[in-house]
Structures are given as C-alpha cells and as structure tokens.
Amino acid sequence: MKKKIRIFNLITIKELASLTNVRKEEIIKICSSLGIKVSFYQRLDYELLTLVASDLGYEVELIDKQIIKRNNKKVSLSRDPVIILLGHVDHGKTSLLDYIKRSQVNYEEYGGITQNIGVYKVNINKNNSLTFIDTPGHEAFMAMRYRGTQITDIAVVVIATDEDIMQHTNEAINNAKSVGIPIIFAFNKIDKKNSDIDKIRRKLAEINILVEEWGGAYQSQEISAKYGIGIDKLIEKIILEAELLDLKYSPENFAVGSIIESSLNKENGYTATIIIKDGILTLGDYILVGEIFGKVIKILDERGNQLKYVRPSRPVLILGLNGTPAAGDIFHSYKTEKEFQKIFNYKNLLKKEQELRFESHESHTSEKLNIIIKADLNGSLEALTESLEKININNKKINLIYKSIGNINESDVLLADTYKAMIVGFKVKISSAAQKLANNNKILIKVYNLIYKMEKNIKDFLSNNSKREELIYGRAKIQNFFTIRKIGIVAGCIVLEGKMVRNSTIKLKRDNKILYVGKLNSLKTFKKDVNVVKKGSECGINIKNFNNIKIGDIIESYKDLGGSWRMGGESKVIY
Image 1: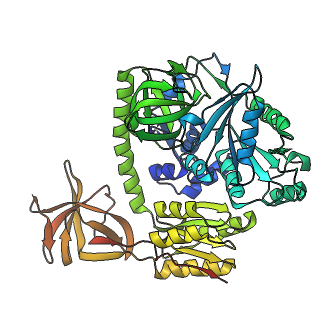
Image 2: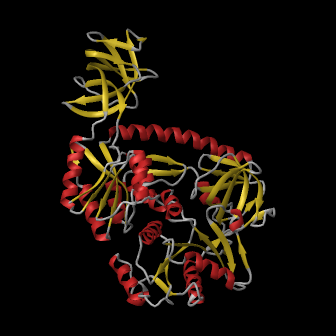
Image 3: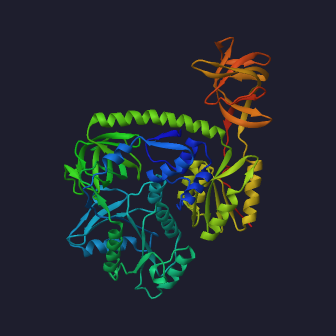
C-alpha cells in the first residue's frame, strides 16, 4: 500500500523532496524520464505531481482538489489573452505601449488601479481584445516566477535593433521560458540608421533562441514604436498565438486567479489588484490566497466604479482581505463561509504537519552552501552549474538557488540576502548599486574568469569557511532505550562530558559521523522532568522527531551561535 502525501497547494521539487525524503536530483531525473524539464523551485502541476509521487511509492491527496473537481464544468467560453511586455529599460517598451493605446479608439486603461504595474485592455475588433501588463522591470516578473504562478499567457520581449541584447533582455527571456509561456520578439527601432536586425537574431541564436525567419519556433516582428511600423502585424501575431492557446473559462466555475499587486491605504484598507484565469468572481464571495483571506466587499473597475461581478482577463481592484498577498500568489474563491472556513482550518492543520515533516527532513540533510550563479553566456552557465553540483566536501554540498545570464545586479543581491547565499559570477560585472547593497548586507560576491579557479576556490571555501559557531554543552552515550507513552522512544544515557540541556540543539553521532541534527525534546532523571543533567549522571533523552537510535550512539548537546555564508561583502575577480 502506497504512503499518502497530503498537500493543500501544488508544491515544488524541493518541497516534494522534503516530504518523501528523496534527493531533489532524483526527482529531477524522474521528470526528465517523462520528457519534462523542471527546476528545483518550479511547482509541479497536479498530473505531473501524481506521476512522480507514484514512481516514488506515494499517493497524492490534494486537499484543494475539490477546486479542480468543482471547476470542471463543460460549458466553456473564450477568454482574452493576458500579455506581459518585457525588455530592457530603454529599448522602447513604453513607446510600444503608448502607440498601441493611441492607435486603438476603443481601449480601456487600467493604469489607474495599479501603482507599479500598468494594466490596460485594448479592443482590437468585435471579436478580439488584449489585456497588457507592463512591469517596472524583470524583478516583478521574477517574483511571480518564484511563486510558480502564471498570471500572463504570452510574453512580448522588446529588443532595440540599434543596440544589443542587454542584461534585462536575457533575464526576461530566461524568466518567460522558465514559466513556460510563449514568447514573441518585437525587434524595435528599425527606423534607426544603425539598426542591425540580423545581429540581434544571431545573438538570440547564441542562447538557443531561433526565430521563425531563421527556421526556429519563435515568432518575431520588426517594428518601429515611434512611427507605428509593423505594430499591426505584431498584434496579429499575438492574436494568432492566443488562438493556438485556445484560452477558455467556464462562467459556472468558482473564481481562480492571481494577484498582480496589493497595498494598504487609509481610505480603503487592504486592496489587491487581481486577474481571474477561470470562473467568475462575485461580490460577497470569500477569497483565500496563501495565509491571507477575506470576504469581497467591493470590486472596482479602472474608473473606481463598483461592479457586482468580474469575468477572466479583466484586472480589477478588490477590497475585503485581511492582509497584502504577494504578486503572483494564487487565490481561490468560495461561495459560503462554511466552505471557506473548512478549507482554511484544514490548511492550518496541514501546514503544521508539513512543517514538522520538513523540519525532520532538513535535519537529515547535509550542510549546504546556497549559491546564485550569473554568467556571460548560456554555455558558460551550464558548465558552471555542472561543475558546482558535483562538489561535495566533508558532506557539504552546493544548493543552487538561481542562475541566469547577465551582470550581477541589485535583485541578485536581494535574492542572496533572502536565502543567505553567495553570488558567483563568471566573466560578468557587478553594478555599483549591487556592490553597495552587498556591502551593507554582508553578501559575499566572487567573480571568476576561469572555471577551474572557481571550482578550487569554492572547495577551499567549503573546507575552511563554512563552520558555524557552536557552544558545546556536553556529550552523553546511549546505554539502552525504551518506549514511553505519549513521548515516544527515550534513550537511557550517561553524561560523559559537560551537561545535557533540555531544548538545546543536538547532534546524534554514530561511528564519529553525524547521523542527525535536531532538538533535545525531553530530559528526565528518575521519571522527573529536568532542565540540566551534569557529567556522571544518568538520564533519559527523547529526540524530537527522530527514533533511529542505537546503543553506543553519542548525543552532543550544544547551542548554535549563528554564523553563515556571509563574509562581509567581499567581491573580487579571480583569474
């Protein structure tokens, strides 16, 4: 009989690894055998998750599967595509947006309800409308990517043909590819004398992007946002791509969608700008998004007019939540408070259960160095990744958080700060703003020009600089063990050195190797709970969430004084 994994939301490779006690790399291999490429932090859809878990001997119970079941009405209508425009800051993205708005008589602009992400809808003809999202930069889109969501259906990447493929362009392409949405390239500024379209096509080919003109699969269009050249054809290609996607929704379904942004203001309290992907959201519905919830008390359009309901692909502002969810978070709606409360309560119980299992798994795993990689070319990036993933020094390994092409910027440092990671660059530069931020947050950045030098330095770093500061309380030896009701397995020990301290961090050692790192949960002498047991005394020890003990094992009690991979913001180029 297969074991059961109970989850509320679709989970990532990393989360599945923690719940099944299987290495992330093994799960990646299973996905590859199914012909699907995934990353550690990509959420698996329900079908793929079920297949992979079954291969590992587990059965998946998706607690929110009633949403899948209840949103399976056969009646379906076409919905408008949601398009995100990406590109370097000065390559003409804003000019393209402005021209599209000016050229269409019947356009509806939603910029009034968003502060950082411009959203507007263009009615192309009686049958076709397009909703555009303009992000302030790749960071917002990257945040959506990390949450495994897909607010948009199509990405249009704008590239200036009189310049080069810039850092933000590379990151935009990588992010759109990782999310799995179609990409259309808009080759802008063809009116310029120094425009070189073939150079751009060649540069794209170098990172394995072939446009249709060169026999590839990616649509592209030459345009001049300034004079409106080629923009009608670009819109036609967007519509064609949307037709191939065959985007549908059912008006009978409950609303499911994504958060674009959220805020708090004195007049309205917590507000969120949303886009629905399926179903219809009605005034009075209950919404659950992560740990944020509430009843929809207002739905506002772009002009502040109140609506009674909203269909998919139209951005609106809603009021009634109890907090500010993050951009990219998925929300589900419920018609009754009873239904909502049942899911909300069960989710809290499930969250606690998963936290315990994750904590237990993480304690078993080897010590890891979190790393972010930035490289000059895609080939270099893959070579660096392969080299780093093979490193294993004294059971210390590399945990790759993020990798992309381009110079090291502020968003990389912010990501490193979140994950306590080191940034490794290869033949790239560090922006002055990123350097300043790294110094302030004590993020270690190292840039290399030779891969073997990088590999040697990382190995040396793991060997010499990865120790955390610890205050050792004492050591005890397991002499026997027995089971106590409501507590579990208790090890009968004699304290060899120092003292055993209740609720301290412990290491369980067997044959001088660390088998487990966790918490000293219960400490007893003669069935009495105590806080400290000193050298020479016998005691009973229960280790939190761990029962695999043997006579002769050593329990080391200590306090973790901290320390991390942060080394004072050092950054230098190593040749």
